[in-house]
Structures are given as structure tokens and as C-alpha cells.
Length: 423
Picture 1: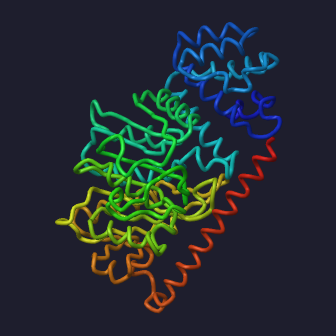
Picture 2: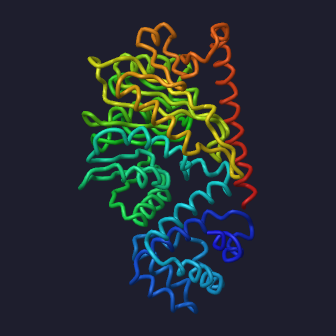
Picture 3: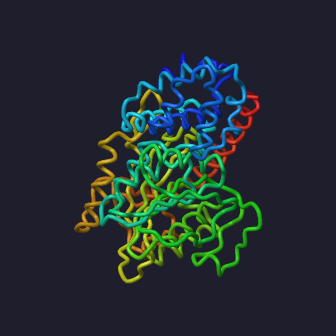
């Protein structure tokens, strides 16, 4: 990947990061896992652009969407890229190269990586919690980006399990399909042009999602109460619409995990009412606070909502895990190192095994959450917070919400500026 994103790809990257080059590398790595197709490409260096275009079409892609394949002046450059990829000697090496490509692309794209990639350490934290239980027979991601959550979670499935994904852009459908194919995960990925119905596709044993934060409604989404059993979400912010969709997509005994901004845990108005309904129904199993800076696209802290089908008879409250101080700084940004992921998994396992708590966990009862007006930020409930500090918690949460809003606006503005710059 250092070569492909450096000297070998220099001509493709001469005007800065190229999403088209990323998409082309994805297609080439898919073809590398298919020896017969790849052997048709390797000898054709003199006509390699047209040969690659033909092979991408045969593999189900759309070569006309790649601007780089419309210029035969790139034959020599593309042949150099193919020679680098040709050195990969096994499907495992190709899969590892693909993972590295997505991670490198996220770092290079910065704010524009928001819709492309879920960081590995965030995925690891989600799977560390969801791996504790039976092996599900079906998997679903309603906003599958590049398919990275589906690829990782496939390891948790039982024999013969089905894998389904949905994306809101044709590019993401293709990217997810290629990623899944490179990792030998049979799956179906469909295109969805609007926000999903509260229930769609069916019910699944395992549902993971990293939907866009603070997404606004578009199109003709109906917000009648009857369609939203936990309450109609505000059209200006669909965070808790995604949460409801995941809960209602779970089969009996199913488990779900969704990445959310902190604000979804404490904002007022309709979102407070939805949280109340979710808590009272027993649909929220656990909330995990993660550090800020884990995503290349934004510095705001995030949370993982661990969900289950409503189960009123088994409510014990909601497990709160505060891992917000467990981030490790690296040259490429912040991440959750293996000990941090292990601490999150241990806190979850201890509570569900025998009701034990660790130094980063608490489990407020439903009546405590009710008294706190369904504010669901884990730090509020941990013993490590001094009693005198609780007086200012509401004000601190108000400030955090305002800063989160400003950060989101800044991210969007920076994305617009960078798009203009790459033109």
C-alpha cells in the first residue's frame, strides 16, 4: 500500500487524494482474488486500461464511472500499479492489503472519510461486546459504508448464516460488495435511496451500524406515531431514528450495536421521549462512551449503543461503561488499544455473568434513569464522579451538545472547502 499510494500511484494522485483511484484499487484487488481474470490482465500491459475496464465490467462493476479508465495515456502508469498488486501471493494477503487501503484512505481523506470507513478499534469494541453469546444465523448493516462492519462481524456467525447490507449511494453498494468478496464473505447489498422504514428487510440475529451523525430527513419521510413505536424522531436529526430501526430489525434474542454521537444520549425534546420509551421497554442493554478523536472525520466523542429486542420482564437497568479515557494517541490519531477493548469486554461480561461491576462500569436501575430524566451519558452514573460535581452535569451536557453541533458544522464546511479544492 505504501507503494500504491506513493510512487506507483503518483500520477493518479498528482492533484491530491483521488476517490476514483481508491475505487480503482478496490476493483483491482477484487480481480487479484480471481486468478483466471487476473492472468488475462497481467500480460496486457500495452492495452491495460481497456483490459482492466473489460474485466471490471465482467466482475459486475461499472468501468465507465472510473475517469482513470477513460484515458489510455495511463496505460504505463496502470501497468506499474498492476505489477505491484501482482506481488500479492494469496487471498489472505489481498484481504490484508484491502484493509490497509481503507485505513490509509480514511487518514488521507480526513473529513471526507466520514461516509467511507469505521475505524478498526471502534469495530473491535463493538465486536468484543457482541461476541459474547450464541452464534447468530443472520447479519445486517443498514448503512454499510465500505462493508467493513459486515466483514468483521461475519466471523461471529454460525454455519450457513446470511449477510445483508444496505447503502444510500451506488458507490457504497459497489465498495461494500467488493470488500465482502475480497474477504470471501457471501452477502447481498442493496441500494436504498431514502432513510429506511422503522422495519425493513426482515429480522436478524445480529445488526451493526455506523450511520451518519445528525442526518437530516430528506424526501417524503412520514413521521406518524404509528410507524415509530418508540416515538417519532425529529426531522432535523435522525440519530434515534437509526436506533429504532436497529431495535425493530432484531430477531428474538438478537443483538445490535450502533455508533452514535454523545448528543443522542442527552438531547431534549422528542429525543428525550424516544430514550424514555427505549429505556422503559428494556431495549437498551448497554451504553459505552468512547474517546474523542477516534474518527478521521470528526474529533467529537462517540458512544456505542448495545441494543436488544424489548424485554420488559427482564429489566435490570442499563449497563453504563465509561471508556472515554482509554484512548491511545498514535501518529495517525487516537485509537482504542487492545487493553482498552479488553476492559470494555470485561465490564460487559462481568455484569451479564453475575451482576458484577468494574471500575469503568455502573448499572443505574430504571427508576434512577427515570429520575435523571433519561440522561444516558455513562460518566454521570459512575462512582468516580465526585458528589459535588453532579450539580453541574446538566450544564456541562448542554455545553457539550453545543460544541458537538459546532464541530459537526465545522466538519461539513471543511468537507465543502476540500471538495472545491480538489476540483
